Length: 153
Image 1 (cartoon, rainbow, N blue to C red):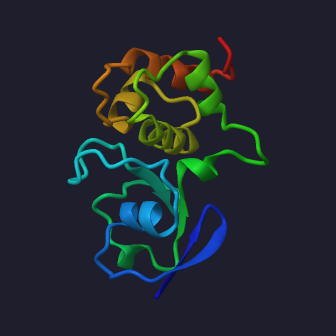
Image 2 (cartoon, rainbow, N blue to C red):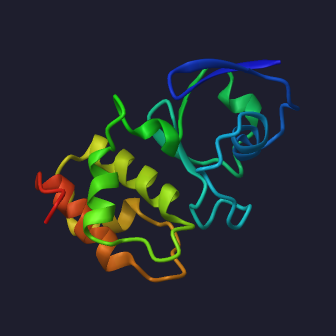
C-alpha cells in the first residue's frame, strides 16, 4: 500500500511498486484525463505534475511517487474555475481531436509556473509533447496569451 497526495487529497493505492503512475491514476483512482499515448515517455499525452514538476506518468513507477504530491489535469483548476491555460486553450481553439491536450496543458502550466513570461525558445524547450493534429502554433498562442495576461484574445 502506497500513499500519495493526488489533487490535494491523500490517497492510498494498493498496486505493485513498479506500476506506472499513469495506470494508478486511471485504473485505481478513476482519473482518466491523463492519456496513454506511446508508453515510453516520448509523446507527453500522460504529463502530470509530481511536486510541481512535469513528468511522463507512463514511465514513472508508483514507488517513485510515494509521499509526493501529484497534480493531474482534473486538479489543475482551482475553486471550480478553469485554469487560465484551460480558458486560453478554448479561446485559441487549440484542440482538434484533443487526445494530447491534457498533457500539453500540464506541460505548459509547469513552464508558466517556472517562467511566467517565457520566450519562444523557452516554450519550444518545455513543450516537447507530440500532437498528431499539429496544433503547435495555437498552443504557442495560448501560452503567450496567458503569459501576457490575456486568456480571451
